[in-house]
Image 1: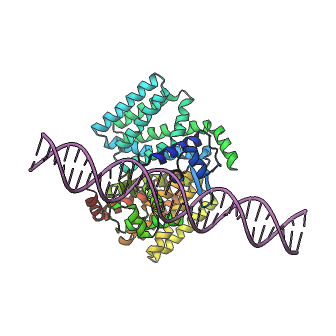
Image 2: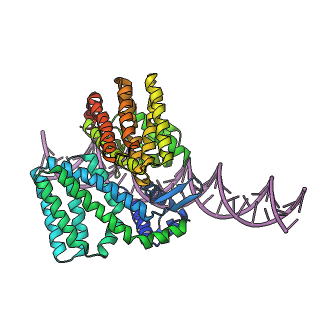
Image 3: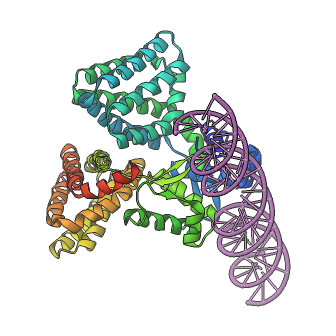
Length: 222
Length: 222
DNA sequence: TGATCCAATTGTGTATACAAGAGGGCCGGG
DNA sequence: CCCGGCCCTCTTGTATACACAATTGGATCA
C-alpha cells in the first residue's frame, strides 16, 4: 500500500461516515481526527484530500472539511453510472473473452454459487466483488476496468448494506448466471443489458433501503 | 482556490506533462519539483497525489512517482468511456430537459456556431466545453455530471490537440446540431447514439493523431 | 569470475513548528 | 438597544526536520 497511515485514516473515516459515526454535515477537524487516530495532521490531511477526490467530504478553503451527505437520489445516480460502465465492460468482455478470462470468471462465478447456496453473506460479498472485477478485467480495456473498479469501491459500503437485508443472494447469483451465459456465448448486447439490469436493480433496492438513512443525512445538511 | 501553492504546482506539472516537458516514465523527485517551483515538499506531495488520483502520475510506495504514459490505446479507451457516459447524459437530457437547460444548451450551441463559422479554434474549444457541460447539467444527474466533467477535463489536452489539425470545426458543429435536435425533440435513444458517436469519433481521430506521441511515450516506459 | 550480502545513500513518509486567513466576540458609537 | 468595526483566537496552509525503508554499489566468499 502506498501510505499505511493515510490508508488507515482514510478507511477509518470512510467507515465512520458510512456507519453514521460521523454525521453528514459534521465538521472534520484535522487535529481532532489526528489525535483520534493517533497520527499527525499530515496523513489526516492527505486522507481528507483523497476522500474529497471521491466526493465523500467537502474541503472548504480555510474553513475545514465537512462530511457531504449523499441523498438516495445521488446513490441511485451512482448505481446508474455504474450500470452503464459495467454494461460496457460486459459487452467488451463478450467480444474479447479469452480462455484466461473465461476461467477467471467461471471460478469467481462458482465461488458465488457456493456462497449463495450456503447463504454465506460475507463470502458472497467477497466472491461477488471478485466476479465483477473479473468482468472488468475481461473487458480488456484498462481504463474502463480502472473506472469500474474505482466506482465499485465507492459503492462498496452501500452494496454491503444491501446484502444484509433481502434474501438477494440467490437472486443476485441467478442474474450473474444470465450474465455469464451471455458473455460466454459472445452475445455482447445481451451481456450489456443483463449486467446493466443487474446493477440498476441494486440501485433500485437501495432507493428503498436508504430512505431512512438519507433522511437523517438530509437533516444535518439542511 | 483551495490551496494556492498546491494548485499552482499541480497545474505546472500537468502542463509540463502535456507539453512533453516532463517525459512519460520520468521520475518525479519531490525535492527537485519543490525547488523547481519554489515551494516546499508538502504542496508538491499533495499535487502529486491529486495527479495520481486523475491517473496522470503513478505513485509507487517508497519508490517515488513517475509520469504515466498513455498509449493511444488507452486514450481511445478513455474516449470510449467518455462516449458512454456522455451518451447516458444525452439520453437523460432528452428526457428531463427543462426550459432553462434548453436555453443554456441553445446558447452554447450558438456560440459554437459562431466560432465554427469564423474558424476560431480557440473560441470553438471554449464554446465546445460549455456546450458539453450544458448537456451534463441537463442530465439532472449530479453524479453523472461530475463524472462527465472530470473525464472531460482529463481528456482536455487531447481534445485541444485535435482542433489544431483537421478542419473538424464544421464537422463537429454539425454533429452537435444533430445532438441538439435529438435532445430538443426528446428522443433519448437518438441523443444517446449521436452523442456517443460524436465522442467516439474524437477518439478515432486521436488514434491516428497520437501514434507518434504515443510511440515516444511508450519508449520511455519500456 | 560471478553471486550474494551488507552497508551507505537517497528519497519517501511522518511529525512538528510557524504563519496567515477567517470567524466570532467584544467594545464603542449612533 | 442595535449595528458596525476591530481584535483575538482557532484552524488551516506551508515549511522544515527527522526517521525509516528501499535501492544500489562494493566487497567478500565460493
